[in-house]
Image (tube, rainbow, N blue to C red; front, top):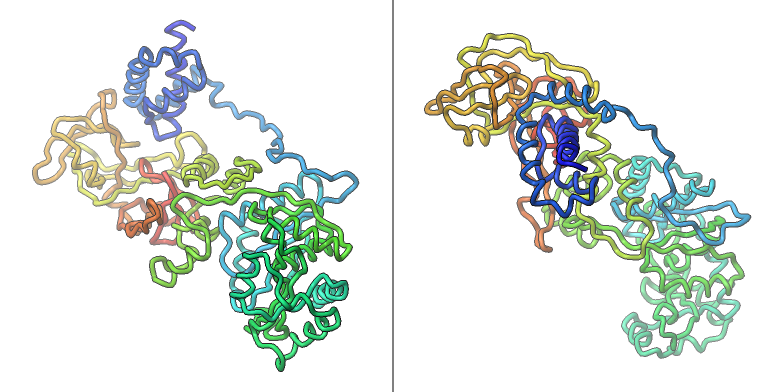
Length: 571
């Protein structure tokens, strides 16, 4: 490839990137694109870098309309819509599927708001069900009275609906405890379970030292009687008796050391009130429900991998079918904790108001911030199925979201710390602005006179005598900065190093913008993680529906939350 061909490719990339970003591009961006497209140029970085800088500078001087015209004339292929290729499965094939109707499940506990980690489990389960033409179950693992609230049941369903997940069946473990009791009695009668009345610290000590307690020596008849006594209020109070599985106290796998299957919990249950006082642990309820519901493949986070031996052992004792376990790593976003133990204190201490805070990786927080559910799905599937835990930068999710919202969101101007600019030779007139630089999203008409508002940060960088391009309006020369910003309109063919947005003085609308940042930096709470600013935007903002996505030119993407407030999504 000769020098002229290289320059042509650079210009093509620069033009394409510029019209995607309101007529401006950057040399670093184009260098990365050209090296990715033509790998052999990596040996010539020092030679092509000055060429890129020159071409980028030249293109940034050209009005957006002229950039679009050049692309249409010289590179029409960039404007052609590529035919969509069918999406390929990004998840590995499941084992043991022949002759089966594949059934997966998503089993959240309704003790908090769903977050990005829940989204991963639910999306992977649904994707596998779709891959094999199967079904997916939503199962509420509601077996811990005192931690569950009806609000959390609803939040989980709302979050799943937002993600677009359609369940074939919804189950509540609390609706069918009798079946779990029946299976517990089978284990007692086969001498594979026993009632333990040891104190918790004794149980923990014995498990650590691999010692059986005296409770293991009781007869099956004694255990059966004590099991029934657990259901009454006379014999045992909360914390005084457990039903434990007779595993192997000498096992190197700690989960096999006689784990708890049932315990007494007298707290009020969100759905069952106080109908029951004996409740199963997840070790028991989850696998029994999987077997009863015909679940063929159970997706689980990798911390459950050690429990596979225990769960298979219990099911074998009961003669019940086993699901194929598929394990994956946890998903978190950097600086945005997902665990309830981390989030709950922040709310209790008043550091964040609720689970819908846009700084949080909860599904409600992401939705409120303006992240699309399609972006969450694409982001999760891009990680594939791995047992490695992922602590991803938020920017990775941003990148997926930007690709989705950019072609669909209108552009508006917004200025902060507004400063007046008076243009001496400007005649008041209506200006038509495009709502998108490349897509047909319509136009808006703005009445403009000789007084404009610009951002204070742009005003501080201005110099007398320099040219500045007012986006969509023309080029002005700065004539005075002493008392106010004075300027005069000049010929549009003149060069202008800077391009800035503006708002017409008579079209100004004041709104509030909320700007979220990382909640934690280096594991320290970031007290400046949520800022609020009063800004000026165009009156066209009022015509947009709530939830509309907007790109405020040069500032980033925002979600319109109300007529007077928008939330920053990302750059």
